[in-house]
Length: 48
Image 1 (spheres, one colour):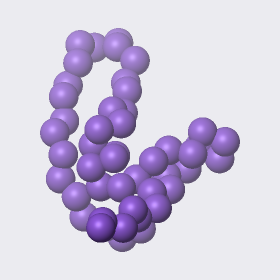
Image 2 (image 1 turned 180 degrees about the vertical axis):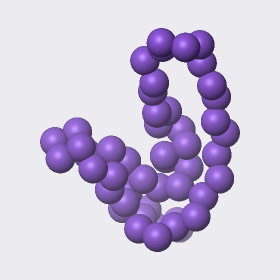
Image 3 (image 1 turned 30 degrees about the vertical axis):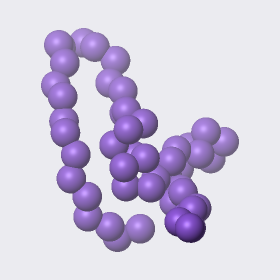
Image 4 (image 1 turned 180 degrees about the horizontal axis):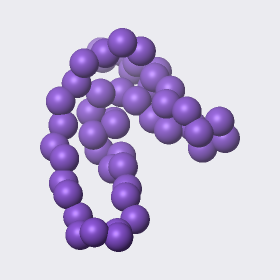
């Protein structure tokens, strides 16, 4: 994808399961494909 984006990183307690929030991914128009477990570009929605 070769895109640069910025987001907020939150560090949790040791031994806590990591999670990747949907909001930072949606902000840069990326989604996780659960079937292939890869990142995919969200389709653009034209503005009227």
